[in-house]
Image 1 (cartoon, helix red, strand yellow):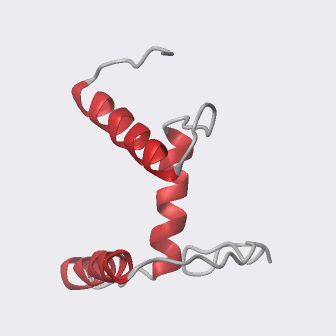
Image 2 (tube, helix red, strand yellow):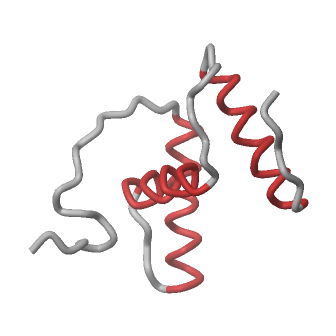
Image 3 (cartoon, one colour):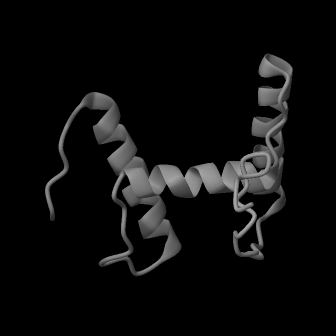
Length: 91
């Protein structure tokens, strides 16, 4: 008991998210890409949970963020710096 079921923790909290059509289509594309390449379809919930886990691993926080667009840019900046091996310094 308490073990993940299909990658989802049984004790997880339900979160309702409003996404636009393009965002939902993108999640579905990721799930189908996984299914066609590996035989395992990832659910939207599994994909979103993986995204949150990845952001935690990047040590992202909401400090100093005034809006969603600013946070999106911070995510992209951190990922790009990680890909290049750079270290971000506090601004």
